[in-house]
Length: 267
Image (tube, rainbow, N blue to C red; front, side, top):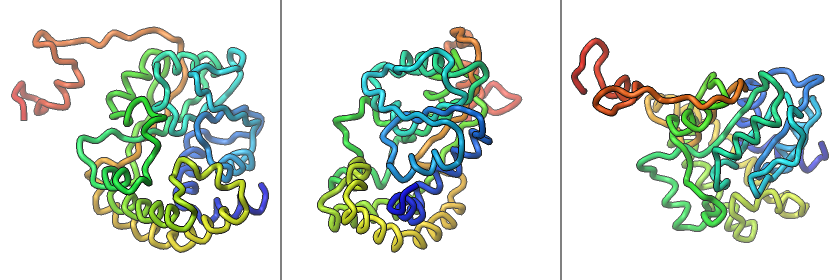
């Protein structure tokens, strides 16, 4: 990892937090192969290669992966499913390039009914590029339904709640003001310029302690859903699963979520 990438990674709370989740999900990478798909910042890409394993990277803009069947032990999807027109077909292709019992890690935006910070980001032009996204994100149930035919979902959780997202919004505003109107999605290109990378690192260094404080405050909001959603799934034989339904048309998941345990009455 070059010095610029090391500096950017060391000062970025978001990248360090993401890498921690990825490492816990994938386990040791020695003598294993990994594929990371999505708009991955150079600092995170360099750090992934540093943790071990044989890594490949792909944008997969057309939803197709140029790799042989069973090429990888681990696949990581970062901010990519939202941009793929046919996400089901794309995950079938991810299933194809994964080895038997391989692990898939998916990180997407959690689609919430109402958010405080996302409209503000769009208002000030520091949000994700809407034109490159087909959908605004996924709910936990939507992600489960998407994965269930070829993967066994082991864990799905949301993270990055109100206070962390607030600090990230302020950081994006600072980046836009002092790094030439840069949005979050253009950070990877900006890293190639030493001057801009230095400004990014300084803003990240100032923001870092506030992120740590915000993360502690977010613990008080443990009962809320975060703005980000990640899932860990293990590859299995691809076989479409039918969702059993009750006589009234509800799925078992709906009945469980919307009915008191031990009764047939809704909340």
